Image (cartoon, rainbow, N blue to C red; front, side):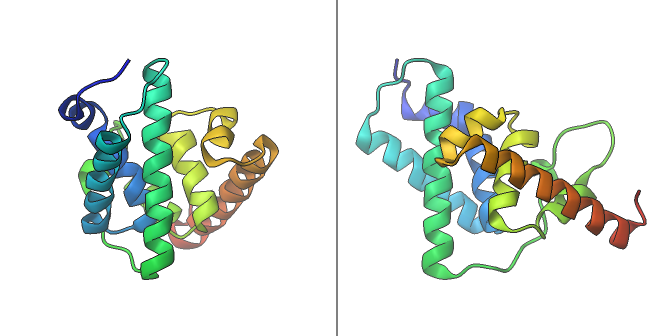
Length: 157
């Protein structure tokens, strides 16, 4: 079950962009990761069991490429979060995603995959090649840290 690259870009492009942005905090670099992910898809021509397998593969590739970019370029500065990338909810939660940017990368990635992409801790553990208990611990630490950040910055309880 293999889709054409254009269909993959149309179907998963925004998701890949959000994953890359969650790591890199820079839209230009996230767009580069999107292109690199599609190129890797074209070159490797993977076969997938189903749509979930394809989505997980693309997220894993985008995550790994983003980590490599951070490692090699030492990117640590953040751009403003584009309104189009904020979760499309009734209320404006951009301040929460701003707080998420202050988390360590390991916590930021599990928060993004859990809350933004809707993956279970088991799926996240498989994608990131970690123990499920580690993913749950990262989520717990991230929630505690976010609560502290939001309380300090926004007087939020």
